[in-house]
Length: 115
Ligand code: AMP
Image (cartoon, rainbow, N blue to C red; front, side, top):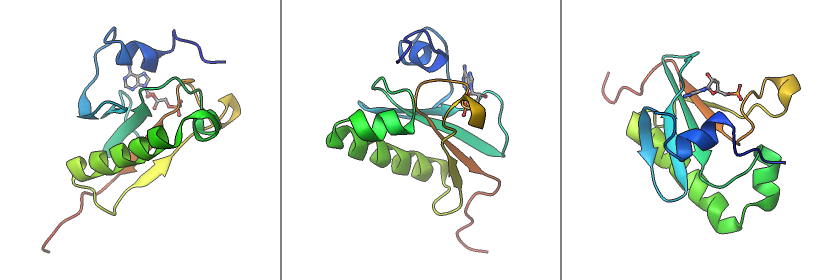
């Protein structure tokens, strides 16, 4: 059951500030307040989904496609290209602390074009 009081819902409503990396009609990407990598960004759908299974089972296909396009746009904006990890903690036992589906994007090195 989705709880509208979660911190990411508040960010989406503009009640809590965030450092936005990428934003469109379906997706918001912003820097994690407690980074565990040199680059640590969270990508969230604007729709109300508690976790990855809620999202993949209940979001319309167009919304899911838009989410992954948003992930790609975020990665490109960060200049990470193919040099990052994604994590979707699922369930409190696995460390999910915010019950609004989010994908962690983490990287310790930006892609260097010519070296
Ligand atoms: P998880 O533990 O997988 O649910 O990830 C939640 C993440 O949200 C953690 O890495 C937190 O550091 C991050 N976080 C919590 N509150 C905020 C906030 N206001 N702005 C940005 N990131 C946040």
